Image (cartoon, rainbow, N blue to C red; front, side, top):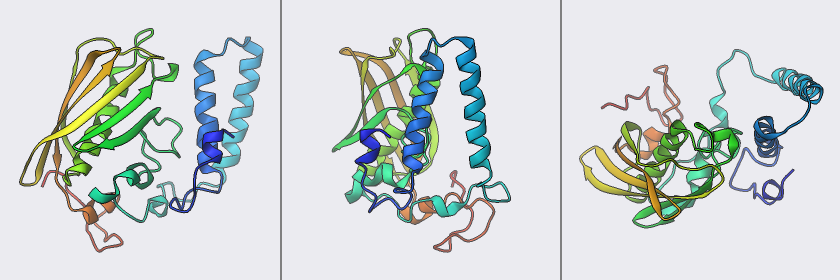
Length: 239
């Protein structure tokens, strides 16, 4: 278990304290070693067998039928005055979720009116040799622009995200994301962002988002037309 995992408070995180974040940290480390370790074939094959056995053990605890239980979602949404809870509200998010081992090594902070992200991307996020994969950067910008939208009280589902790659973003080098809202027009929020590495802008992004009520955001996982905890029916992000 990493020092970071051991130091996480559990009071505001109902999914913490039972080993889930620690398991995510361990799997994240294993993922990195899968693409970096120069172990001989026999060692790799043995590690694969043991990892498969562990997966079989956990598979016995997956609820039936298959859908992920919505009880694991946080019982609150992110409010403009509670910007530090962005990560806490999405513990299983594939970009910043502490319980998701594929989550990016990105830390989001708030310097109103901007959202600031810092990261050092590791080998599992590589595309071209030595460079961060473009899809990884697109995902990072989606959450960074969303963070800026939270500051402006204009958060909601993504309608359109445009990424312009100016230069390669390098693996193992510090990267800084900056994002801000340019306009809120009715139910649409427009945001922009950029990625700076070594003093050079490597990527620019623009996005359009639905400005949605927080209660509807909290119930977005109800897609079957049934009412959520607050009575919200299935959502349509295009409206």
